[in-house]
Amino acid sequence: MERARAVVEEWPEDGRVVGVVADPSDPAWTGRALLKLIRAVGERRRPAFLLDLAPEASNLTARFGAAGSDGFAEVADGNATLAGIAHRRPEIDGAYLPCGVSRSGEDLAGSKQLTALADRVRDAGGVLLVVLDRRAARRAADTGWPDGWLLVGDPESATGGEALPGDLPEVGRIEQQASDGRASGRWRRHRESGGFPTLKVVGALLLLAALAGAWWWYANRVTDEGAGGPAETGAADTVAAAPSRPADVRPASTGGAENAAAAEDAGSGDAASAADGSTLSYSVLIASYASSDDARERVRQLSGQVDGLYFVAPTPVQGALWHRVYAGSLPDRTSAMSLMERLVEAGAKEEGRAWDVRPVPWSFRLAGDFGRDFGDRSAAESWARRLRERGVPAYVLPVPDGDAYRVYSGAFEAREDAEALEARLREAGVDAELTRRTGEAP
Image (cartoon, rainbow, N blue to C red; front, top):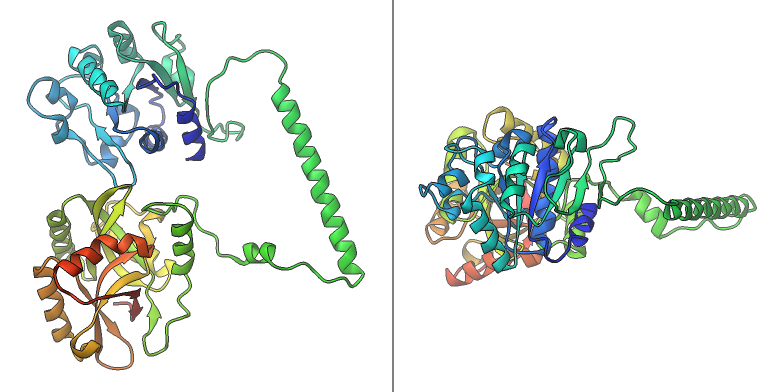
């Protein structure tokens, strides 16, 4: 994502409407690249739209559940609206617009409706990325709406070996990793080759200097320790001992150091007492909905599909409130991964992604009479049901060492993410304490 952001940062300010010429040889890779691109664009410029006029080049229609659905073709024919065809994902601050079924992407690329949409996006100060094949790119160049081109995948395959049409700048390119690893899947701004490679030479010299310095430091440290000097401890040892985290796991809300710290805290459940049970830090993200009614309906469907715990957590994501549907309440990532695999096998979850195993240890504890836990499950479930009728998403967890049960609401990575639910609890007149979830995994 950092390289994606760097590419977007280098776009000219007037590069508001970009034709993305896509290589169709690897749809799965192209889909991932386009998702990173629209995420990077949405972080910098809003509103951001990704219009897919080359659906065969990627798997985005499957990713967004848009296969065979209305799209821009139906909007152009007056049979749908842009709001009606827009698909969203909570981690992307932008909208995906599918091609549709009544007209081809090549036809739409030269339509007056697309030119009108491009003008509207420019006026709003946003960005419109239009995915095209090379035939549609020629139509687009003839119409004149693109501000520039961006190549995704192998340039030869994307363009058919032809020059990009029209007198338009190339604002960048995203190349797939080569089999020998030299491309490294990097995102880079396109520059003409030629001239002495000064930067490469300087970079190589700096790298050699850094390696030499590291070797000198290591040799001196070994010498000191061999002579009985004290070994250095502290930050380096802490980093070495810290648990690793999959590369595609990122904080889902506001990002930054606070969420990173929350994710670290989520794995440390040793603070819970034996009476309280384990700290249940992990849950599996099933889906996110803009509507709380849709989220509750999904929970109802899941409960009829596979036995287990399902609940809703209203969570802010980049300024918008999403109602996340979670499954399970588990003490560690391994258990949560196993649960996710079972849900995928049972058809309750579309696909298993490491990012969907979320460290969400913070929940509101909704105590019973006199602040005590509930003595039996039926009483706890009755209280949780009454809360849900009042608009409070509540669920029940068993407490070890006896027939005790605890009612919780929500699950969050950081305390700050719980503010929306806290306001809802206040409106409902419910006393609650934000704490770590503890108990037995259901």
